[in-house]
Length: 264
Image (cartoon, rainbow, N blue to C red):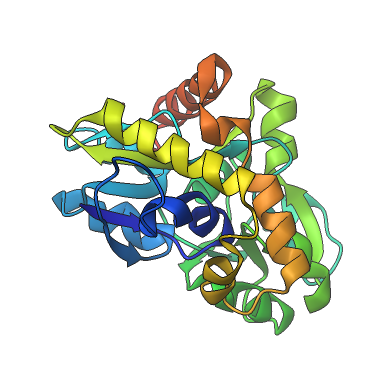
């Protein structure tokens, strides 16, 4: 079974047990490690059986895939940040050059919804690891960052212009839908969801078991940042989206479609 997810600590933590044959009844997997900005478009041809993508990419993928109710990243206090090298009002984004990690990421979709009325002058899609150094060096006026950057941006001397998670939660009351797990249509999604839940449960029950695997793919993150990353992004919504999680996804994609940013 072809499985694709990012090398980020939350994904390797969630899928460790399945990848290593520790989930009863789950088939062996052929894993592709790729950042979500890559899988958002790589999934368009239906190559993967199970794939981690941004919720923002769903409207382009639901002809080939079904959304699974578990395994993804959705929560509170975990949204993308807009960073600058100095203090400035949010309206200064108008006309600015902003670096973003992908044009179909949930982060960028939230940014576009937030910035309506003071749109930036130029958007540059660049590899995530280049964003904070680029902002610090003056290459970009601002940068849109996700994941562990929430814990490390001050190390680059940067300032948080806007927390898009706080903006989203205060505007809608919903948690932030970030990363989704999809299964190719025609597969047994009930079985797949049960294997993923079992992998999550194993990770929570045996947190040390995945430590070496997570560290191997953690791109030189410190153990403390890795721990914070997992604690923030692997939560009850990872076990099951539930009514609240599904409502958040619906609100995000309806707002985006109404604004003409994604297909209906």
